[in-house]
Image 1: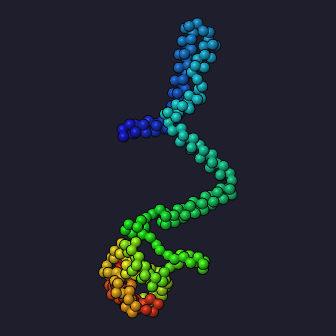
Image 2: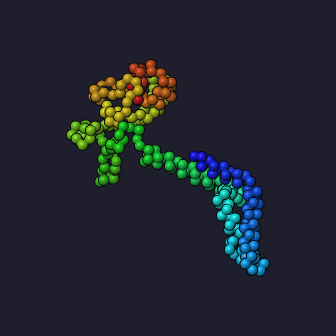
Length: 260
């Protein structure tokens, strides 16, 4: 950690005192070449030849300065800053092109963000259930009718549930639209009709009270509703007294038994 901080401090000092560094570097390079010329004069080489020979052996001044800047400073950062300044100057001279470029980039970034959000939610992020890798969805195909991914009728679901043994549990559900009426403003909502096994299959726990039980699946049994936490929070301000009351969905009474 101390070495890293020391290196950072050294580079910051160079960045702040670049002009002094350049001056010191020029002076040091002149000193090295002067010493090398002196060595050549001591062995009897004339002045002009000493200067050329010392320059060839020392190397290219510009190249050596670039190497020194890379070693001591943030030359790449300086070049990036120069490119940015140049780009801003070009964009400032063409305001129409700049506006079009900004709008295009904004639309592109927004579209990519939206697409990634969908992919992340649907494909990358695991489902919020217990052991989501063990969940599968079943559907039916009717190739002769040109139909695919059809749902199953209730009798077919009962047949699968009673006869298929490759799954530890089976549950049925379907999304439908309802008109909600009762002690509040009428509202059009989407709700899920489900079998009693849906919550155990997904490993979802109820927040308060209980979920469905098998006897409530029998035709003619009292209809029961389970409210989602979001709906409970948005419409009933987390008031638990809603439990046990009756709401009406498509003019049919439903008893609220649980919050999930």
